[in-house]
Length: 174
Image 1 (cartoon, rainbow, N blue to C red):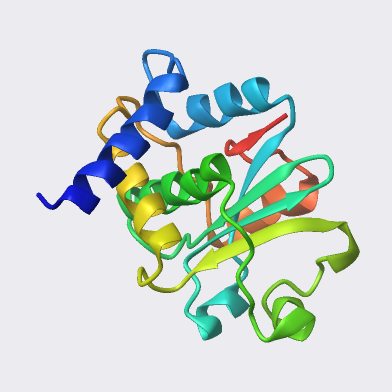
Image 2 (cartoon, helix red, strand yellow):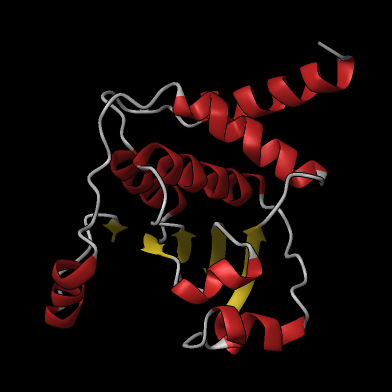
């Protein structure tokens, strides 16, 4: 392992160790724990279908009052979990916003988004940057601590029916 890789691993492990993670641990429990630690809601959402056209599979969005993590739901449950953990890595390391062809690009990706409310918005499509590598290693290390399955929100007709009725997602944390 190179000196740089070892430093990265130690930095990621130090952040995980500072979280005082509860047991058992699931993505849902982790999100509630982080929301309480940060004193702001952390909400999980499936990415809109338009995101696939940009190659995005995960996204962290911070507003003045809360954090939102979007994940690709048309992939394996374990991959969804890893995407969420990766975005949590961005959040905890306070990685800075990356450009997506200006505001117009984000409006295409998230058409209902009020850009004036956004403080931070990160998405991932590759792992070429230091921030992406840090978030990826963080997700891999934290993923080994997950001991409870992550309930998947219904898709298709049942998912749309729940959304229409205002049923809270099992992935939302107040």
